[in-house]
Amino acid sequence: MSVAPADPVVLSFEDARRVVEEQAAQVKAPGTELVDLLAGAGRVLAEPILADRDIPPFPRSTRDGYAVRSSDLASVPATLEIVGEIKAGEKPDKLPPAIGPGQAAAIMTGAPVPAGADAVVMIEHSSPHGQQVEVTRSVAVGGNMVPRGAEARQGSVLVDRGQRLNDAAIALAASVGKSQLEVYKRPRIAVLTTGDEIVDVGADPGPTQIRNSNSYSLAVQIRDAGGEPVLLPIAPDEPQALRRLIEEGLKSDLLLMTGGVSMGRYDLVEQVLSEMGAEFFFTGAKIQPGRPVVFGKCRAESPPFEHRQGWGSQAKYFFGLPGNPVSTMVTFELFARPMLEALAGQAPRKLAFLHARLKSEIRVKTGLKRFLPAILSGEFEHSEVELVRWQGSGDIAATARANCYVVVPPDRDRIAAGEWVAVLPR
Ligand code: AMP
Ligand code: MG
Image 1 (spheres, helix red, strand yellow):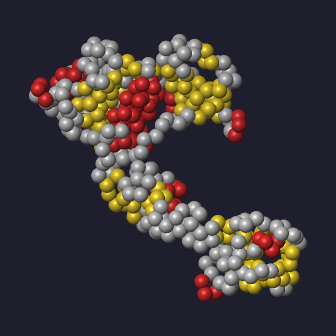
Image 2 (cartoon, helix red, strand yellow):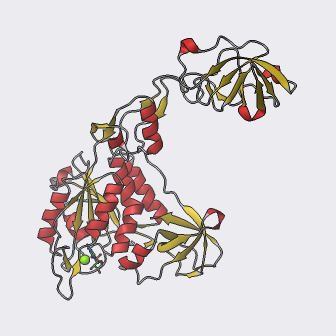
Image 3 (cartoon, rainbow, N blue to C red):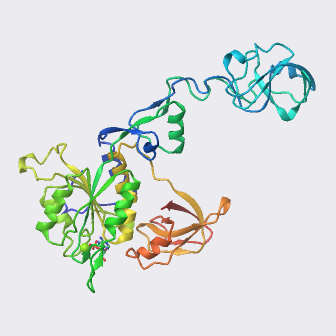
């Protein structure tokens, strides 16, 4: 599947994405570390979280009411004898004996349903008179209670390794008594911005110079995807200096470059990488923004010619992302993120899209799959979306106003107002 950069390989979006996913599937899991429960939020789990006992550990009432034998309520109203009261957390020796025919025990939400009872009737359907209660509704076996172990059996996997820890996963970890969690170490992701016109944030830009913004948008996206950004100095459009910085970047787990991958005379990234013996999986994707995106693998030092066939473990993946700021952001999301997530130990997942009605017509040329900055608004069943006005893929200001990208399939030159479109949140 590898090609010399002299043969451009421009893939459809779907094929390019598949190539990245195939490579990502071959990445081996990173090292692990132990962190405190809350520090685990947002990290990728490196050990399965197991149920330390049955969940729930006892048949749990889900209502305030009366624990009953459902057969006693075959015809209602029925009057039962109250034999006790069970509150949540009641000590086992305080629990009433097994419920017999014609008997009931008052019970609270979260309390254990006593032996003999097979359901709970809600307090709303009962009226107590002294030691007796009149029940006005029947209840099915198992009604208003969760049997012991119904949510999980002791020893079963609650959250598997490779999952990113969200609120529910942290809650589960807490519920099984894990005060520390083993998580994968964050991969180091090198960011190399290229271009003679680019100066850093602190500098006073000359009239034709541009401040580096891509390194910063990428750093944010890298952190969000679970990586540790390593910002390298800005590379000039000059092969020797560029090569030295690429070699530096290849010491990290993944190298992201921005700029220098288009067709211009000073777009040197592919040239330098091919001189270094890089393997290229694709050199473009039929998308907009982001068409010149490059994906490949390279060693820091080029191996002797005769060893170029089998790549050893030293070879690192790289992406050459187009320099236009919106292209950089979009191509990171579409292609670099799945590779980064794999390097972070995360289980693979597919891109997820929302759907909304288009507020006003879109007209474009066919041939490219487009991811156009847009504003998603409305709520419930009235989601609607509208493109932001933009000056093309250099327009960060327009993109900052956007909260999503509208996806336009490559075979559509017109999408009418009111049509449903796929939306990639941002
Ligand atoms: P290139 O991909 O190198 O042809 O760059 C495409 C456009 O993106 C040019 O207008 C560059 O000035 C701009 N650009 C490249 N790198 C950056 C960066 N790091 N920050 C902001 N703009 C950039
Ligand atoms: Mg450039």
